Image (tube, rainbow, N blue to C red; front, side, top):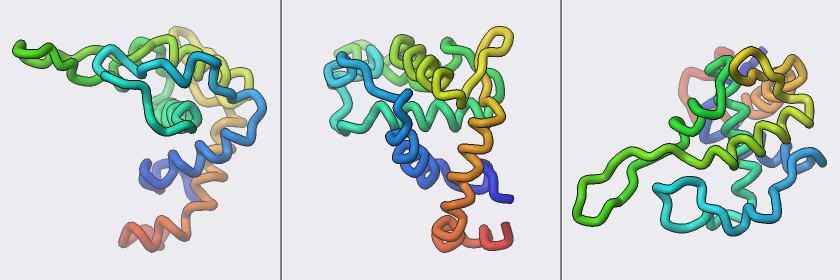
Length: 149
């Protein structure tokens, strides 16, 4: 069976995002069109479907990295802040975006709370593995050596 580990992230995340778009529990908040994704960004995302892409990326990260909390996700989605003539410094990403996306994924049944963070539920694991399995043929053409899976 093909899993998330067998498919490159740049192929899997758009596929999962398009499938998340069909779920009624995953909807961008009203403020999502105006929000920056972190203090290190100058403008909000240009892609109108960026909320679904971020939710898919969060779901993939939870799948691969196990139980993860909002604070660690903030570090993962942070970046260098331009401070003018001063050297750039790393700044964390927006916690509100991550919290709301995790809450929506939890409401959809794809994520569950455990201890100090969240992890992918059995339903979420099946959802991600099914998306990876649908991409297996396209990934085998794009990545040499993947056809053995």
